[in-house]
Structure formats: C-alpha cells, structure tokens
Image (cartoon, rainbow, N blue to C red; front, top):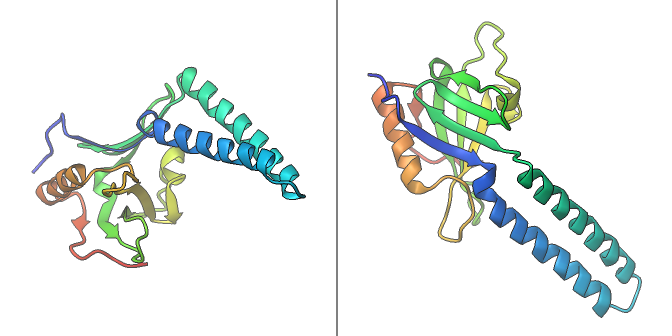
Length: 180
C-alpha cells in the first residue's frame, strides 16, 4: 500500500521551535545580568561574561531568523526529507527505513523517536540527514512533546506516523518503548 501524496509529519521545524529557544536564551541572559549586579565577589566577572555571550548568541539567532534561515525535517510518501534555507531537498528513501523506535530513558528524561535505516551497498545518507545520526545507521528524529511543553513532535503526529508505517510497510514500528 502506498501513502497518500499529501501525507506529511513534521519532525523538526526551526521556525516553530524558535519562540521557546529565544525565550530560554533571554531568561538565561537576564539571569546572568541580574547575578552580575547582585553578586559581590569573583563570580561577578564570570556572570558578566556569560551575560554578554548569551546576548551575542541571542542577537545572532534573531538575525538568522529575520534573514529567513530555516530547517525543516519531515516524513512524507517519499521518505525522510530535510531542507535547509532555500536549498534543494535531501531525501532518505522510505525503502531504506528498517525500524522506528520510541525511546524512554526513564527518570523523567525526554522521550525520543529514533529510526534505524539500511546502509546496504555502502549507502551514505545526504549531508543534512547524516547530521541527525547518533551512530551510523540510527537517526534521532525528534523529541516527543509531553505535558510540560518540551519536544517537537506531538502525540497526535506520532500516531499518524505509526499508522503510516504500518499501512505502507515503510519499516517496522517497535511496539515496546526502549530504554537507553
């Protein structure tokens, strides 16, 4: 069975994740600035340097977002697709998918979705996708959203992806969450 042409599950989207990133960096910058003023010892200088570094990094991220920098990773009928800025799409074909795994580290850690893929015939994935590899042949696709707001993949999209895998035969869905 083949997937509908309009099927798409977004795994990572820089523009969607930007507000959380910007707010976290702003908070850390403000915390270091407050510490610089409040502390009256040698840590003052360390906190001042950290505040300046966070402010510079925050400015760099804002400039990149304003000029249109984007990273989008999704799965559709063709396979795993990654695009950066306005460059051509890089695709890991669905025929190479082997096993999708939901990984729960326990102890309240973030639950993630991983994909094992075939490297038969000395296959090398495209550069953007290779950057997602934890070890050769295994990709970290996304962190799954929990009730506290972390992650980039909703539970609804996770179930849509599972149905896609089961209906199309594009790999196997691991039923039991793994612990690493």
